Image: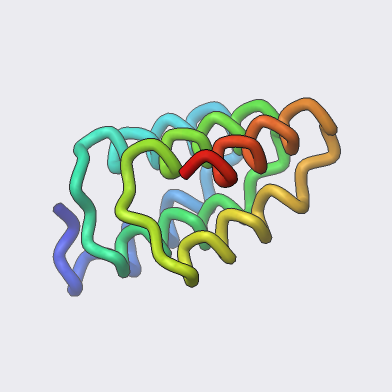
Amino acid sequence: MLDDALRPAFFAATSNLSSDYEHGRTLLSIVDRGQMPRPVVLAVLESAKTMSSDHELSELLLAVISKVQMDDTIRAAIRANAASLSSQYDRGRVFEALARD
């Protein structure tokens, strides 16, 4: 997993990817590894704020919901990201998954 020294540089570079698809795939590669420390989860969700594709963002949020140990702060960060989704369908999928968790 990303160590404390490399994490800021990694997420700064990730947030500068111009393609939401590539940005989402990069973040998903971290989420798909499984158990992540809480600071990494929060960094993934912070980086996701720069994504404009509803589909890519919702897929990432759904992966986080399914694979991460949730707490109130993580739920709030997911809700904040989901609130930015303009697609009612994608937003609904994320909020439904949160409600089931």
